[in-house]
Length: 78
Image (cartoon, rainbow, N blue to C red; front, side, top):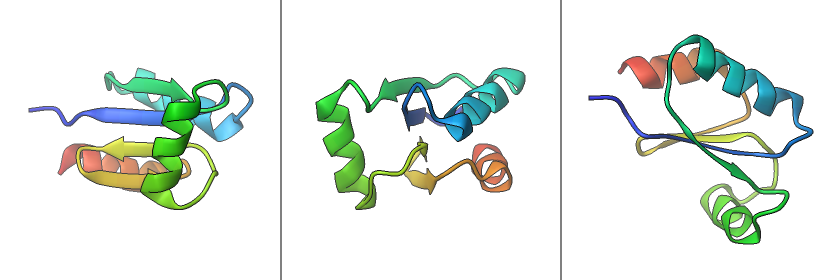
C-alpha cells in the first residue's frame, strides 16, 4: 500500500519545485499545502518541525526537511 505523501511548500521555493518534479516523474501522489498563503498549514508545519524552512515532506509518519532525494526514495520504498 502506498504511503500518504504531503509536501508543505511555497511558490518561489526551488527545492519545493524539485521535490514535486521528483514525485511527478516517479508517479507519487501527494497533497500540497502552500504555507505562504495557508496560515493554518504553516503553523502545523512549524509545530511539526520547529522551523520555517521548506519543503517539509511527510511520508507516512516520517518527516523530511528539505529535498533529500535519497531519503525520500528510501521512505517511499520501505
